[in-house]
Length: 152
Image: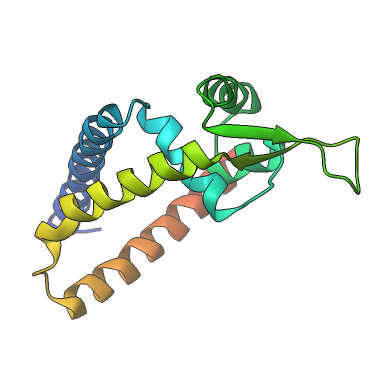
């Protein structure tokens, strides 16, 4: 690999870190407005997108440990934003779903989030498409490297 490529790769990694940091600052600021933490807000979104999911599947989807997600769910249940239910057809399992209050918090947060991101609407759609494709390739390559290193 030549030096210019190495420098550009380091700049890309640094830019990912900056974007992630800014994104989490934005999420943190926004979630505080609605009385939840950033991870709680992400959990509410995951539950909206996957209604009646179990705790283990939710943890897998969020790429977090079950104990971490369990603690988040406990706090969301206590805040009456999430409901734990036993399905009629399988009384041995518990599923999670948003309460009406949780849906309202998420709807308000989504509206604020869209407003925050509206400043990005003037980005060129073709550049965004190319960037997204490049990000997906980078993620795939890094996952391959990670998986290879875990099997050694």
